Length: 417
Image (cartoon, rainbow, N blue to C red; front, top):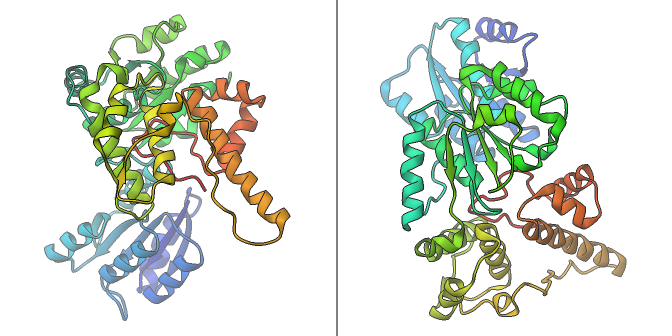
């Protein structure tokens, strides 16, 4: 991982650089803030460690400009002269911590270890919408709050697309919102078990195992051993479809606290609020104002059975938003058809015919992959089988198209490339 160190005192800069030799960090050390900005423009870093008083520019201004270049950049401010107002301003600008000089090198290294975990497994957005107007969701929310006060592993039971991963993120945020978090498709685990490096990064945080019903039999015992070896510093969560069986060794470790995630048809009071939240978040990603739902469109949503649950709702709204240009959504032709049999392809940039065909083909592949995932309820092995691909090949195609492998049941559909 890359760290940019900005310190104008040569001796202290060398000391910190030497302290990081042989560590997981690749260090770029500079004395001048303008040079630091040029370095960030040339190649991003995951972490910026900067002094407050620098020649020609304050550390606060450097933080402001650096985060404008890279909004996800994690920042540590250090100074021997830090006033409380400077610390407050640094935190407002997104700094993770403040180190008063002189500081113990062990404290510095421990802080970087924590930041390395957050870079490798960032926590979910604490502002992610959580809609719980219906009685089943209010009961689930209360159960999540009780679970947050324990260290017990949690097993979420629910249909495909119901939002088990969203519930896992909610529980993590209630337990420790700033801690590292990762979601891992159980179908991708083999006889070697989870990556030990990932488990190490997640210490103090949570790991959610998605689609535990697709775990290969030979992976059950290694996963159980990994759960034992990780110790109490890692919270385990998993999603399982109703009626699916767990291997005995996993049932012993995950069966102590089971929470049912209701399907969308049981939470009609949440449906319109959920649809508006999805539209608003998706529209923000596209830099536009979210259209409102007219009465006819609302009635269509309320009358639909939603066999694909929240994931089906997300896919419908993503397609509709891509096709909508006005301030309102008057209806959903897809629901009138019973399913979406229409493919909406953007016009490629003008050019040679072969180049336009290739561009249109890439757009079509992205839509086909998303549709296959939606029809499979986000189940990667099932989608791969229906598409005639290996799981590895499907994962590669998803990555090529910029379709995330994780968080496929998050409340905001991502814009296709």
